[in-house]
Image (cartoon, rainbow, N blue to C red; front, side):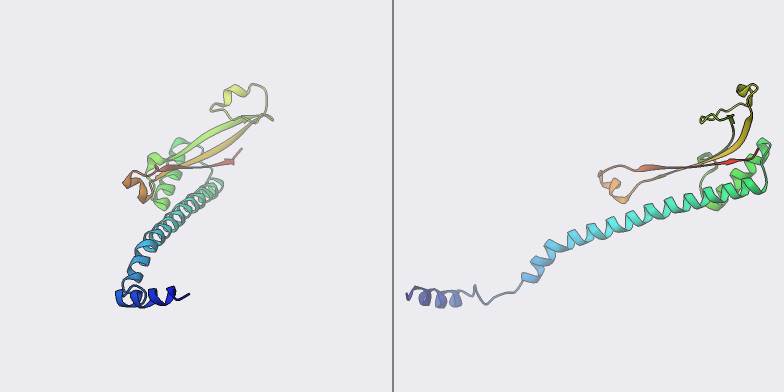
Length: 157
């Protein structure tokens, strides 16, 4: 019955029970890396979503430009590409503006109108935007980057 009475004075003399110095440093050492990784992940995800939104907006802008001034010639399509390069910050090799066709009720597109034969041909302009994003953790060998591919097709004839 009196055994607990013997251990308490020994614990007090050894300073085990009352000394809490350093406990906050140990807790911080456990929690800080987890919080840092969560914050970094949140930042990277928000950056990825923001870039996707920027590219979607640029594709919508491209569709508006194509509808406003129908790019009939290769020079007109180059002008549309240059406008997009300026507004998005992408290089011109990351943007393609191509003329494509669809024959009648077919669901597939073709690059030449000659393949339609006697079927009604519909003319489209397709704008493709590509970009690459490498999150910060790829610098440490964790995971890999990924590619954005945004495409808009606008019927012009």
